[in-house]
Length: 142
Image (tube, rainbow, N blue to C red; front, side, top):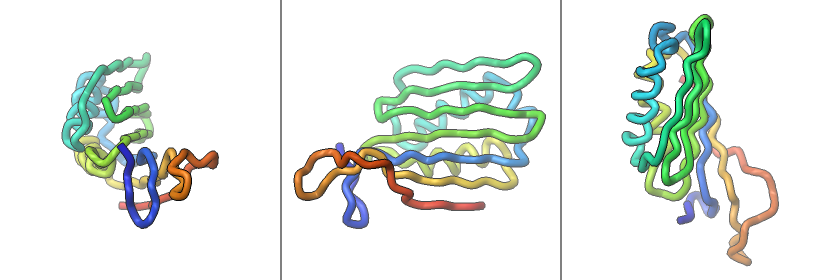
């Protein structure tokens, strides 16, 4: 299913999020990170298919939630209070910015940024994929 917005047609929205000044106790807790990432997927309207998370020694968590609409991925640096998150959703059913806001709150992030990209841009004339790179759609700082 395609997304039609502002005269463009594309397959997916990819939000690259930076979360700063987060609670290190949250970022170093594999179970909390897994639960928050799954809950973020559900909150934004996605269908969870599978998940995989790993706790690093001495600290940090990486994980991915595979959704029917694509994926949500995270890597944390609790010692720096930082988390890098990818939120990629296809179609109009779910909004990755909803997941972004959810995670910002759950990570107790005091400062956050995101960049949203349009992925799989369609040519309006041919109705085929354009063979070009993604387009920057939006940037936000909070």
